[in-house]
Length: 293
Image 1 (cartoon, rainbow, N blue to C red):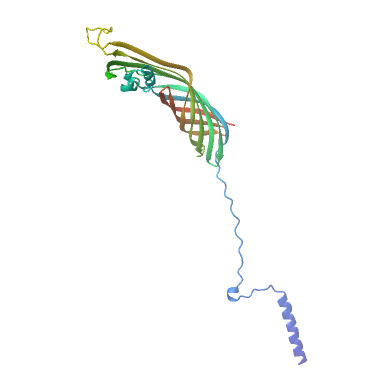
Image 2 (image 1 turned 30 degrees about the vertical axis):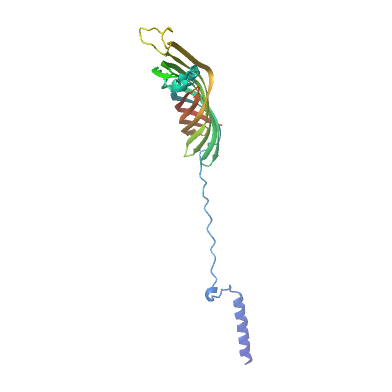
């Protein structure tokens, strides 16, 4: 009996020692089962999109070809009104509103340069640009004299109005705000701004006729009744080195040949504010090459 008890004691000691040498096995208790946690895979870095760099200062040269349109139809009105300001003829019949000059145009080449600055946010470009062109656009107004018989202030008038007008534009400059969108090596853009130029212009108007014209063979020498009077008035204005103003809009595209060299093509329209009742517009297509600094 004593040997049996000793055997059981020794078996218990051996079992405890064996259990101490084994790794602990988790006990499964329904929903309390221990589930191994998996570590997430390392995130794959995504490369940021790359855009051609257009930011900074730039400058270049350009060549252009322009179509010029000028409107002289209002140019004689103030001159005629001044000539007839004291007569009932103007107060009642308004000969100053008669249009004797028309619209005309011309075409020509220009050359110049540009300089500006771009700010860039990824593919978005905004900036400012100064653009200058040297040209020689010269136009003369078509003249269509008008002769009419009208009555005013109890008198009859045979009135003839004729005139002349000319404009020569030599220099044009614009200051333009610019916005563009980078597409690969291309930069399409639009601009809007103000324009200033230098020009020489001239205009004149002549009002002539007969007050109470007589029929032949009665001469217009004061012997007729009512008295017959011949009249003629001329007014003119001319300026050299005059400043002209207007607005400018354009659209174009720059293409980057190298990191600091680009070429461009654009179309531009300048609307000129009236000067001495002469107005007009200039449409230009141009090409250029520029350098980034």
